[in-house]
Amino acid sequence: MSFLGGSGARAGEALRLKLSTPLNVSELLLNAAEEILEGEDDEAKSEVAIAAGVKTQMDNYKAEMIADAATQRAAAREVVSSAVKRAENIVDESLRLSNAASLFSTYILGSGPSGVMTQYKTNVLGDSEQQLKLAVQEFSAWLKRNNDAQIKAYTQAVEDRGFETSLVRLAAEWEDDEEVEATSKVAMSVATGFDHVAAAQMLDDAIRGAVNSTVGSAAGAFFIAFVATGYLNSLTEDVLVYALAAAGAYVSVLALPLKRSETKAKIRRVAETFLKELEETMEKQCTREVSQVAQSVATLVAPWEASARAEAARVDECITKRRSLAKSLDEIKRDVANL
Image (cartoon, rainbow, N blue to C red):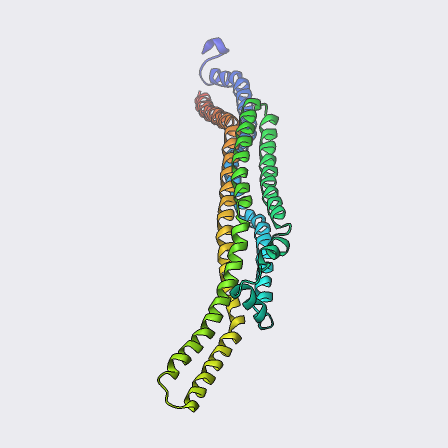
């Protein structure tokens, strides 16, 4: 090492001095690189977490929409429930003891129409059909507003990061429009497909059945009394039997209001069957459309997530290389120190 200005210890010291500057500069550069890479690593991991978290966010959105849809469906149920109550009012007003003579004249003697069909159209139906259509339309509009907001928000987030989304967005909008149109038509067809003529006839028949049952019970009591008198031997017994028959017939007439609950139960069963079909259709519409939006969002963010993961991998590779260089520098510094 004489070319360094001496030999032995002096030469080693001279070499250490000459190498100290590049080694120190290298250490400073590696330290600066470490600080930069730590920042990039935090940013890359954060970006991956945000992009990957979109799936969880959409899963939560789907669960919330399905839960909130129950509140939206309640509007349709309220319309039907109100109509059912009005139909029950017709039953209450019809099956009254004060109406016994009129019911007998109408349903037994056939003196004229009962008027139930007219009452159904005026009091029960009213504007219920239009209200139900509006409730179903609002449900579809509510779904579209929320789903469009999701697409718009994630499209903006992806575009802000420099990714092209026009083709994906157009495809999503086209599929969404077709999906919304198809599913909303199904729900609307159920809402408008209820047979009100058959329902009014069912109501009339139910009241007729209650009247026939009451009259039949009363007539049956007198028939039994008539048959029984054929086996009796005294006028007193005959009178007693007919008195009992009259009492039985009177009890049957008094029981007329009790037929209301049976008639109302029939009305509720029909309404509940209709509501079950309508609500199941609306629930399927919600699940299908929200799932479609979740798929569209996943397609939108896929390039973003892939890019974020690639960047995170690049930064991780750089960190590994920096650590390797730092280790090599430490070995060189030890070697220099031992000169």
